[in-house]
Every structure is written in structure tokens, then in C-alpha cells.
Length: 64
Image (cartoon, rainbow, N blue to C red):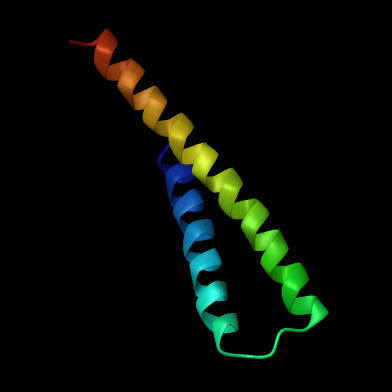
């Protein structure tokens, strides 16, 4: 689970870095494609984090 969380956070940071990088520059078609791929990965990362949080909650409820 720790690996999933670290991977998800890495994807979120990558997306954030890309949006900052491209905010101040001219966008090419390749830039848009790269950002589109990063946004898909970012949404997948959010779902991974949600799944990890749900697993932690279930574990905690079982072990109260």
C-alpha cells in the first residue's frame, strides 16, 4: 500500500509541475498531449489514494 501511495503522490506532483511549467510558455501539440497523459495519470492516482484510504479505514474498523 505504501508503494501505491508514493506512486500516486509522484503522479500528482508531476501533474502539478507540468501545469506550472506550461502556464508561462507557448503550448505545442506535444505539450497538450503530455499534459493530457499526465491528467489521466493524475486522476488514476487520486483513485488509488482513495482506495488506500478506504483500505486503511476498513482495517481500523476491524481492529477496534
